[in-house]
Length: 108
Length: 118
Image (cartoon, rainbow over all chains, first blue to last red; front, side, top):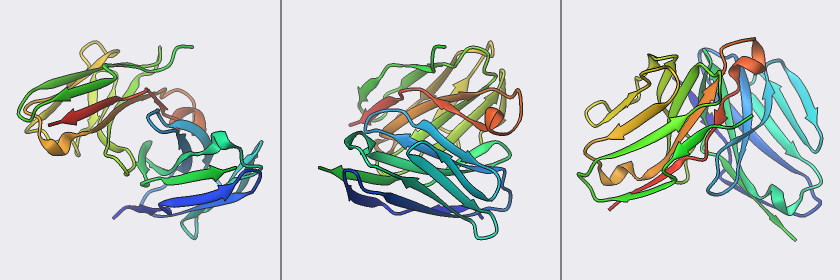
């Protein structure tokens, strides 16, 4: 079957670093997405990993290990506007399966 | 480039009533998806269209939900009759089948329709 897990909530201080872990199980795998979703808004694309390793994009980085079924999203130099839900989703045959999301709260 | 448009943004109905949602995808995107997102959960795929054909509707509760995309552009999702457990945000997304990798796989989401069934 297919399964995807990520922590429900995380809290961090402005300027700090937070790492959101995601583990998944699937029979078919084409890649892994991270989306950001502010309350009441649509998910927006953050990153896509298809090969093992770290992809860096400004303050956000995403890591993938296909053999371990594991990914993480690293948010650096946290800002108040980073308070949102972060959704992990794997791709199988161009269909996305989402985790429940991790709500990150950034405190001043 | 205009994003995915959805309407209405909010809808409150009583159980057993009917409701319809509309989606206009990004211009040129042949693939269109409807998701249901219940509070505290990730989006769950209800139906996927490629042009005006259904690719996957395995998770669509067909006894009460229906969707169409007659001309391969706009789409409507209908619930008839609604139940309390249908209270959720209904997200529409689109993607382009052109290209490979991230360009093909990335889905772009609309703002969603927030449905409350009383």
